[in-house]
Length: 40
Image 1 (spheres, one colour):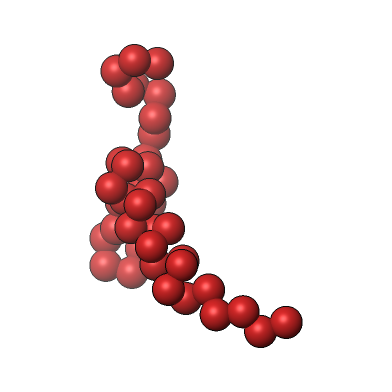
Image 2 (cartoon, one colour; image 1 turned 60 degrees about the vertical axis):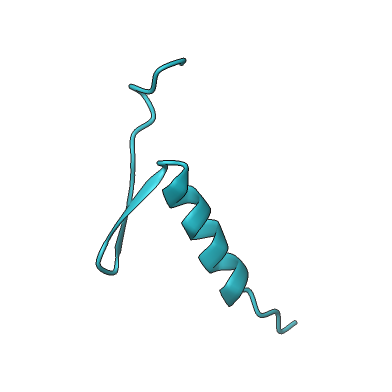
């Protein structure tokens, strides 16, 4: 099974960053805490 998920993975990462769930620092990806979000 040879699926090319490269494009979809990049879009998924961009969405997570836009939603404030992760942050990029160079090649490092850091998950962000959602505990202090307003509305929880």
